[in-house]
Length: 275
Image (cartoon, rainbow, N blue to C red):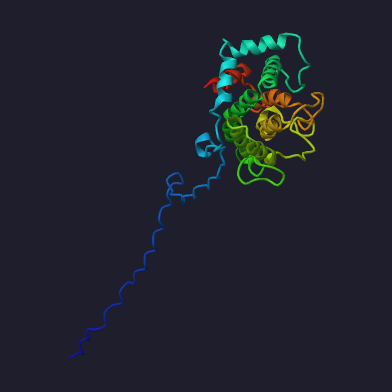
């Protein structure tokens, strides 16, 4: 009998499956791709000019005595201060200061000079009140540019700060004693070689606040000086009443920026004088 074929127990080789290649993820459309967020740009710190609210109020004494009342009396009959300044400018009179460069300023100089000539206390009071009105406004506009320039703070080497000079003069107005006059003298700087109105220093109206660097000196000169020469270039040699009149011009010029109305400034100063 023939030998039967043995069944092979060996399993037929199974077909090996090739591993499927991983499907590449479909690229997202560029428009929908999420871009990494860019860091927010750093904002530059902008230094802003100081506002009046951010500046400590000046601490000078404000005149309240007899001289201030005499000043009010001198203005009681003036119906319109601007009209009065225009009238004085139109009349014959002493040659105007070259820096009284508008008719209203010519009239203002003449008014202040005449007042101080007849009543020094009232004339100095007019200048000090005008300066005290303008001083905080000048500080607000000038801001950091006026720091370390002798406007405020500690006494400077050759005299007092502008704020202190106005304070000393105001105390003399209310009490013109020898002691108060000496206090004004001690705060007066007798050594300045140049003044704000000199060609080398005279500010443009965009920087008009620099005129106030002389306002305390002018008020002090109106207290401590006597006779002098009005044709000179400095308050060191002017008569006292001339320093008072020209000081009023400086009080306005320090507030006269580009486009401002001089009439409006005069009306505001007039209101301060009769308050």
